[in-house]
Length: 488
Image 1: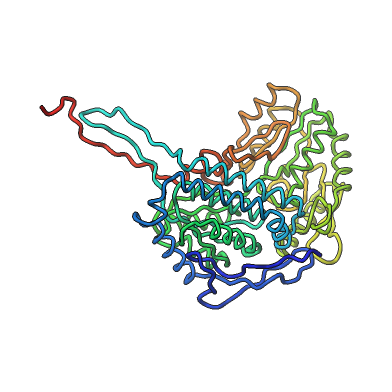
Image 2: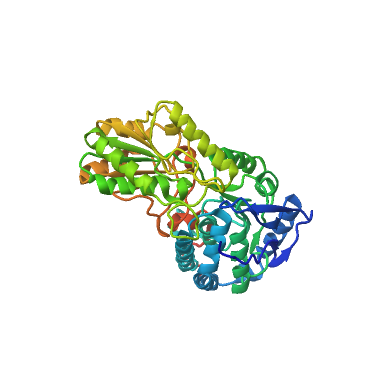
């Protein structure tokens, strides 16, 4: 086991490390061996109130942050990106300790996160309004202004990337933030907060409050002085947050929620290539991915060859110690482990054919064998509900029109993929499938420049790209009387 130094376990408020007002702590658990990593300060409403006060003060019209040039905000973000790069080994090892993902994957995610920060650093001084040729003796223009104090609630599956997805556009826009990391994975958010302080962001601009959803999270979403909430997580919790935001002060919201994404493989696809793409789509991050392509639709002409190859690839997937050269670590915690194993048992009993995996791996830690079900039907629970684990459901189809209808027969609409050599087929699928992201002959290629979000119950708004920063801006119209003839 790699020894990782735990440097930060307190709340981060107003650029200071403080205990929770209640003095409470909670354990963060290593999913590899089920041991306690550290006790972390447990924030609740009292701590959120302090963080909101700090963020509100930092957002005052004459504060250091509000009077800072936009280009300087960009320079601070660039410095933060450089610090992520120079600390990527430590941050990756800490991420692996807290959430169990393979350390090589975590390293890549830290470096990718640094590039997202750089993208938004470049946006900071390019937030532009418009001039409008309004009727009458007026000059009209628009200003883009920061929305204000933002609460940002993170998931546990990609802790550092999700932290960055939230804070980078908000800070580029000039907002202040209170971040609540997932209770399962608080450590890297606190470590990045230390880098934020090192860079020189003014006090109160970024605050980090570890804690539980029903206490710290609810306090954020219900707080009357929080102007916006950004949340990534389950659709169920997203509904609660939306209700809270509406019931208090009609907060702006960005919600990136669940998915049950289809990946469609047509007869003309190369079976080996298609099976590899579909495997990565379903099993990336141990299946703990909102956009995972877990409904694999395969056309009948290659169906038998495809399921044989899919089973072979899954059986050869390496699962184990995430600090070693493996492809998959454990699930995040006992709750998710039990949930996924429950879905696997349902799949076995409902008539689907388990052709790979289907069991727990080992006796210690939350490891699950990569599991593949063939002959899945659309009405089966494993084909309709988000499992959030290493489970691939393969379904057979005959025609284009049929598979588009079946792919769209879902409450979700986060992602979709298609594998075919035919350009017309690919573009027709991309046009007609109801999803926020569509990948052709690849899957889950997400870049800093590309907006990400979903249709239907997969969320509201977009993150990343130009759309990502617009979520943190208000549009103000200014109209000034200017006579068409000068006063002489």
